[in-house]
Length: 297
Image (cartoon, rainbow, N blue to C red):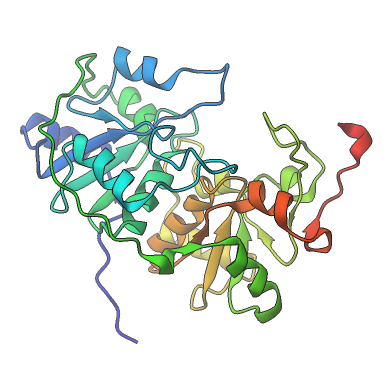
């Protein structure tokens, strides 16, 4: 087995602060605020306009998705992604650092990290600790919007990092891939409702294992060490030497599983983009497992 050298998936707040101070942000290094919050809670773009890492651009995941799909947060086309990130000053030579402002320390940033990778971009990292720790440590912020010079980005979809409904359905029979669900235990089991969801009961895909994404983070909002992450996969009997599909509700927190596995030296975790949002609406009833009772609704 040939071990490929993996690009660093995490950068520290200290490293980014020094890069900002040294004036390194530009065509070779771009920073993205990928915050997103449930409607009626916080306003991501408004918060970005009030304060963000100096030089950071706002990555609006609502604008960079397939809006024509009936399912939530589906990947945009290669052309759409290339055009969107190109307008943020990102080329194929740019090191991209992604963060978000979630109180957990990290929520949507791994999704954008994975999006770059699925579109063929290797040099992308997540800010370890997120904006929460950037602020806590007293690093500089600004309200000045960045105006990067547009760049040319060529997107090439890496289908090995992406799974479709048909592939996951086929996998129920072939069992070639392990399937891991990153939602909370209650939503996975079907004892808690899916938040802000209309017509979507909780539950999980038959045969999937539950690893809630919050468990990959420390209480302070940093990613746990590779040793701790490895032990977590082992405790769930997930074999990191074997193929693995990550799923959740809409393909967002599943990317935390891909990131955690990457930090353990496994860069090939595929994400089921439609996840439970699609599975619940399309899959045969016998493939959906849930303790949910309709009268709860």
